[in-house]
Image (cartoon, helix red, strand yellow):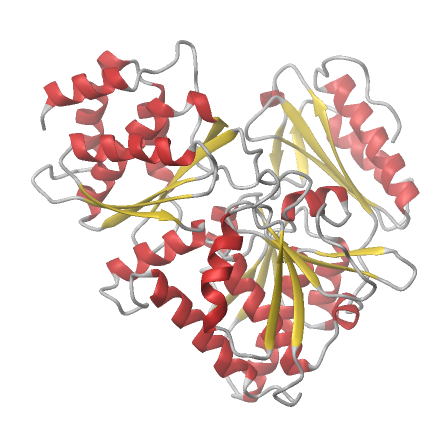
Length: 503
């Protein structure tokens, strides 16, 4: 390993004084101007990971649904999964090391992870459409080159496309061709095969409006359109030509604000969906005749897919074990419908895709979506959209009929600023608070006051806030409960600033 070159190059990518970042489920994410040294070092880490596993590793430059000014990076493991948790720790160490410690930490990682430095390394790089992404991916390339790794820069791709490319490369093409054409062909061919069996005649064209969050999804859907069968008519909005990425649009905006994105005119009963900035989340929605907005989030998507898979398994007489994995944020009505009506087992795990993925692997067929619209490890919005469109066509369902499968309980999400989020510790898949003392008892007492209600609190993974989720029989009650729980958190968990105000 050429430590002279390492020294020289790391000086070109200096770490800002006092900056500490943590590699979490979403990798690293912060203001773009603070990330140059992180990108260089993730290039280094990708080479070490590649040598350790003798496989191609992916590096994706994106901050997903964050504002355009932010950026981030996440690593992709050989089969297209997220980086293994044991290496998240190495990523954090490397990111926060002072320049003079880099050599020592790289040597330690090589020892602890049994990295054979004589092996070749191969890294695939992709990036989203942010103005900062091109320069930052160049910093990744510097890191890869210093340690003598080979790289292939795919340029502008969705996050799930990079996961796909890495998986194809490491399965020697068994999963598909490691090109974007291979991705478009694989998905569109599967989709075309599926909808062949739909009851509607070939010319009943299915219109779908897609809000692309002014991100990479618009570019890639335009490239993919020629591959779609003629029955599918997609109309792209927020394609990035006029407005800023994720600004008043995208899956996260629609989910949080429960209203349509800017730049998409919504007529009654039209089927619409929104991607997020890197196309790894999707939510559907429509407006009814009275102008009321209906969100169809990850819970309803998981339910639709579960109904379809359960029918398929019954048809082929298979005794495969099907289960749905959710987090505490899943709406209580979805859990009840799956367990009581559909008779499909539901398992609850901690928030974060890696926890859902890990649990889903215990079953023959595991279905999982976070309520925010991120489903499967990769959360591919394009393939999720295609499977939803295929199921709706096959079952002859309108968006309203899909929405009516069950009715969501009214709910509320809040956050409370605290001096130190670590005062909150949870158990039972984050549904119960263990510390501070007395908080869970207080929540239990408040929940008893309202019908069909539940509430839980959990510390944010990234900032000193406590997140609060409540459900109840009416929106008024869900809001009142949320306010009372936020006051309890404020008083018992070291709230900062003014006490929370009623909603």
